[in-house]
Structures are given as C-alpha cells and as structure tokens.
Length: 268
Image (cartoon, rainbow, N blue to C red; front, side, top):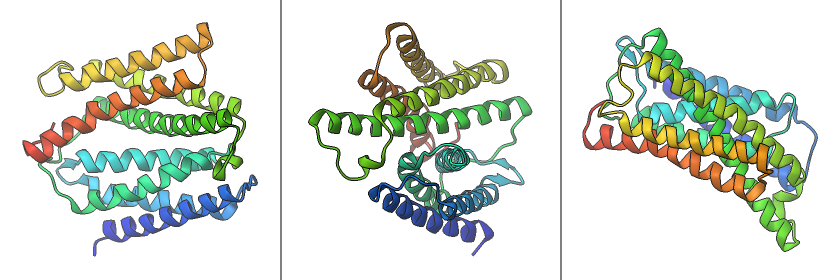
C-alpha cells in the first residue's frame, strides 16, 4: 500500500476512536479537558493532512475534485476543532465532525472521477484556501446549529436527556454559534472577493451557478447577523438560516461537482 493509504487508514481509525471517546465523555457529562483525546485528535489530523498531501498534490498539479475537496474541508474542520480545544471545549461538535472526517477518507483514496489535476496560480490558490476555510467554519456552525436545535427542543419539553446534559447553557451555545458565523462570513467574503479578482469570469457558464448560490448563501448569513445585531434574533431563527445558508453552499460546490465529475466526466 502507498503512504497515502497507510496514513489515510490510520487517520480513519484514530478519528473513530476519538469519536467514541468524545461520546463516552459526553454521556458521562465530563467537563474537564482530556490530554489523551487531544493527542489522539491531533495525530488523526496530522495523518489526514499527510494523506491529503500525498493524494491531492501531484506532479501535474492539484486534485481539487469532489472527494478530495470534501476530505480537505472535513479535515480542516477537525483541525480547527482540535486547535480550539486548547482553549475552549467543542467536544459536542467534534462528535459530528470527526466521524465525517473519517468517512471522507476512503472515497478520496479509492474513488476515481473525471477531474484532472492542474496547477494553481497564487491568486487562485488564495481563493481556494479562503473557500476551504469558509466551508469548514460554516460546516462547524451548521453542526452547532443542529445541536442547538436539539437542545432547544429538549428544554422546551422540560427533559434534558442523554449527552445533552453535558452541553453548556443554551445562551452559551447560541453565542458560540454567532461567533462561528461571524468568522465564516468573513472568510466567505474573502472567498467571493478573491474569486472576482483572480478568476477569469465568475459568471462563466461552468461556474455561474456556484457564484449565484454562494452569493445567496452570503446574503442569508449576512441577513442573520444583521438581524441578530439590530433585531435580537435568537436560536430558532439562527438555526433555520444557518442550515439554509450552508445547504446553498453544499449545492453550490458539491452538487455541481457530482454532475461534472461523475456524469459529464470532466473538471469544473
């Protein structure tokens, strides 16, 4: 087996072990930091990065197709959560992100598509980097919003059950969601700006749908942040708009990539 395969399989196993550890801690309502969990997740992220480098970076350029991008985004999300764990607990989100990171590795390694590697100019690389970070942060925000919705419904019913007992108060969860949204919107803004500056035509036939859907998603997130600041919008509104905005981003990239790579058999 190749280095990419060994690193990917090791990261896959470590992510799953870390996920089990997180769920056990949440079920036991443990709040203290766990150095073993931090070391495990850090090792998984490093091995995932090695796998991505060996798989996506080739002599002909960079593979940024459907599965490499999905794995890059989930791996970035896992890295952000691991780093954030040094100063703030996000274990409830890692219980969702770590399994997704693990599941993104096998198809990246073994599923082939019509995408061909190509070199990236510096400006385009900046656009791609901003988009990966934006997707990762907003994916974490979407996961946080789903957990916030579950917490809200359990509080409304008067029964806090299972792992939800280990969660912070709903006001803290809500504040953290908006912190993630601010960071995500800033990164998404950078993605849009660098796209217009460095890409030849953001409204060309092959990318027009991505541009339009991304702009709609940015508008939803911006509306949510403005509503929070000026109108005091709270949990349920934030959850609905966050999920809707992230769904638009998923459709913008991944929906079109499925058609381009696996139906038309060509790169975007």
